[in-house]
Image (cartoon, rainbow, N blue to C red):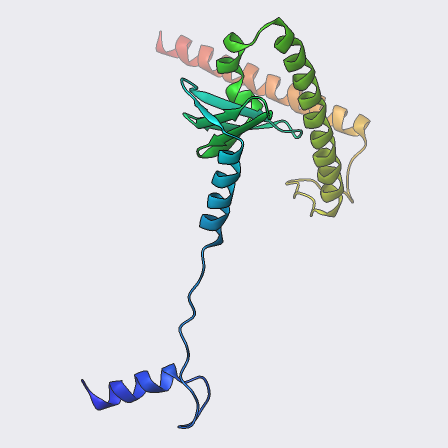
Length: 192
C-alpha cells in the first residue's frame, strides 16, 4: 500500500489532531424495531392469538377521510381479549379511490355509516376549498395586474363620439363598395 494513502487513512481515523489522540471507536447501531417486534410477538403469544385465514384486505377509516388500506394482510386475533393484530404493508389512500370496491361488501347498517362518513368528507372538502379560496383571494390582491393591450386611458373618447365614428366608418365602407360595383358594371359594359 502507498505510504501517502496509509497516512491519510490513519489521519481520518483519529478523533482529534495530533499523534497522541485515540482512534475512533466503531459504534454499533442497535435496531430497536426488531426488539419492539419481538416484544409485541411475546405479548400476543401470552394472549394466545390465533391466525385468521382468508382475509383479502383490511381498510381502516381515519377521521380526516383517508383510509389505511392493507392488501393481503396477515391477521391474528384473540377474541376473548378483544385483540386483533394486522401485519402487512399499509397504504394511505383516499376514500373515493376505495368506495367502488367496498360497496358490495357492506351491509345495510354499514351503508348508513358510510353515508355519514361521505357527508363529513364532503363538508371537510368544502372547508378546505373555502380556505384555499380565501387564500387565493388574498394572493390575487398582491399579484401584478395583467397588461391590457391597445388602451389609452388618458384620451379615451366618450361613448357617443365612438358610436358616431363607427357609423361614419360603416357609411364610408358602404360607399366604397357601391363605387366598386359601379366600376365593375362599367367595365363589363365596355367589354361587351
